[in-house]
Length: 247
Image (tube, rainbow, N blue to C red; front, side, top):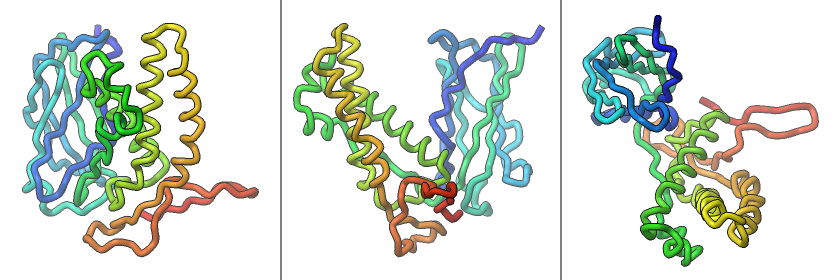
């Protein structure tokens, strides 16, 4: 019978394919914290109309990470925008598993505007409380970045068009710090002051998120819109929800 193992395909958000550059697409697959044995893997990329740009090309796998490089030439005639679809097909124990994710062809990626230095500048003891110092804080920043961009995307904002990444700093620093302090409170057992501080900062997150404003390159032509776009995709009014974003 087909393999019904509930493997995890760890996509970290929509796949961004940068026009004019080769883009290596990856996804980690695992079950119970371990990588399965993958005997074969292929990759396909489809246009918004379903036409294949890449159709069943041989991809690679190493330690549970599936990867394929989409070349710039294959995207040269494609339009900027969302609605593209990619698919890895991994063969595990003789059965094929299709792993899908949505994709966007874009002018540029958006990069996280904070690093471990920002967390230790805010809370200098964070590094000394970690097992191997400041480098341990990167996982909390990565999670905060992934969660924030996923939220922006789910609310209808194509975050890769943001051209004021520094606007995300206050929210990202706060969210990453909450993750770090929660981790410390669990490590110490009773939580203590780390848990209390995490809850205090957590209470500020809605306000910080709603204050995010960015200049946008809506047409991805290096011509910025005149108005700053808010992070929230809707206006809350008494009669309902009204969308704020244009595509």
